[in-house]
Length: 195
Image: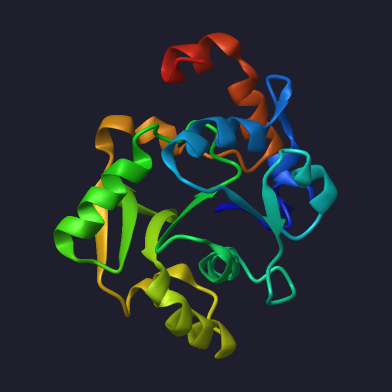
């Protein structure tokens, strides 16, 4: 599940996944890295659905209205995905690790966890996660009770944080116009991410 369901408020209310980075929408950069790692790609979007459909992947909006955040996207993904494990990545992180899912899945199985979350240093990255589909009911209850904070939901679960210190820059996300401009520099992007 690629999470593209936000309002893009820090980007001036623009849909971040459709913003161009080096001539291509950010969602395309994410798909390029993410699709080879998974058996199915779903895109969670709440606006510009037809534009996201042009990627060729199924686009599904939140069931919960009002741009309820990434947990609402995960909730829809858990309902719709054809597989027992569901991964999420954000649409504004075009440099995500090419081995993200393999490493999360290895840790999830090894530890018997319910959710595996990427971490760099002391910083967890909860929108880069792998979750068991069996978490659907509990997440639905959490959202129905007004819960929106990822950390508050994870606190009730068996979560394994998986270190990615060897690829910390891969979790760079682009939230503002200034950050977008900083990644437009081809030399720096190529040097850091092989692009």
